Image 1 (cartoon, helix red, strand yellow):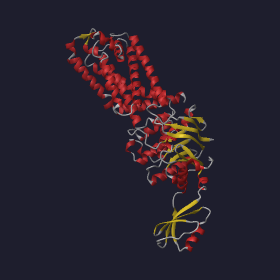
Image 2 (tube, helix red, strand yellow):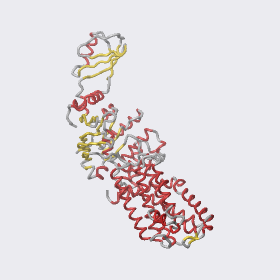
Image 3 (cartoon, chains in turn orange, blue):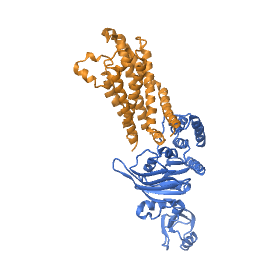
Length: 257
Length: 313
């Protein structure tokens, strides 16, 4: 397929997914904003002043980047995993397999929509946070790059989950039992310096720890780890998962007999 | 040119089931072709491999001389698929389903809209274009899948049991539409259980059973293979028993209904003369079964050994 036709097929899938996100905004955009508002109220406004400062910042300022990133990666992941599985369940994923679309194009269509939802929710959460605290961005480029890369990484992970899922339970297992615990234990609410050496070492094995700290650095200029290694880890993970996703589609795993 | 050429296609599923055991099939360009077979014969597996929904185990497929493995874009662009089961998003509007499918084939949105309008009008769905697809009736959903399969204007349309569970009126309308697009140059391949459908619509036909093509021929050639004609006769006067008559197989179904079978080389006049001589008067008559059905059952019953006919379509 020529470049223009590739673009049209990608854009058609991306557009279809965006229409879905906007059509069911009460399920896709509103709930995460409400949930994050509650975090800001409870952990920031009510409990935060009693905790004091962390890393030299008010507690609400300290947790804000982690909450924004949590919203981004959760929504990027959930969007793609539920859409891909829903399309498999209704069998309209076959529309893509029958057409002369490349597997990379299929992945990009879903993943870009996942990125878009992640970023839409992220921006909405940032706006909500302005009611509770002031924001000054330390590094705009790093902020955008990390938000984009992280949402891409978790969109692809969501697609892999959606492809491998055989029943509805399978698309909630990863978010509930892996994604949420790793996010909560990835330093959203605390600095890794507060942990004992054992738990501190264990936290360094958590990939989400690097993402949250990189984003915190981009916004606040403060991080438990250096920015460059964190960016490198996110970038490599994105490439690896893209390759895995492409391989699954090429082999037809989860979508062909 | 062959619209479709399948060479030694095999498929073994992960559970060990050998669905296809070396299928060879050719369908000429412009053909209206039927792929017949009982449930589990391998029809849908063959079609799903053609449409990239199932991975083949081995073999080669050419669509208008484009290899489906190496020239995949040209091969896929030449083909439209109407699957057996509904496979569109039940929450999308009719128009969006058709227009999006065109987009997946790389067709610009403006052209996609005009084509969608044409095919939805042709298939009587234009009034329903803004309706969510799940609210359509079964027959409309089937027509929606035909419109979706045609929106990229393929040279070959494959339909997997297109008139299954469809009422008579809609079935006739679908047949008329398919005949029209075939006349306009689209090669059509359909699988069906309805042998009347195959006989009315198709020129060529293949019978597949247990993963093997038993027969591949023109329907008119196949009909000539029938050795017996069978009829149901409604008798003028009731009978309690029937005499034995040379050359006729007879079975009294009820007092006024007689089933007869006789070799094809005998004329109806001869048969009626014999019946009259034995005091059997016939009020009316009809074919016992669809002629193709008889042949189909014979082929399936005797399988590969008795297929005995060359691939000649």
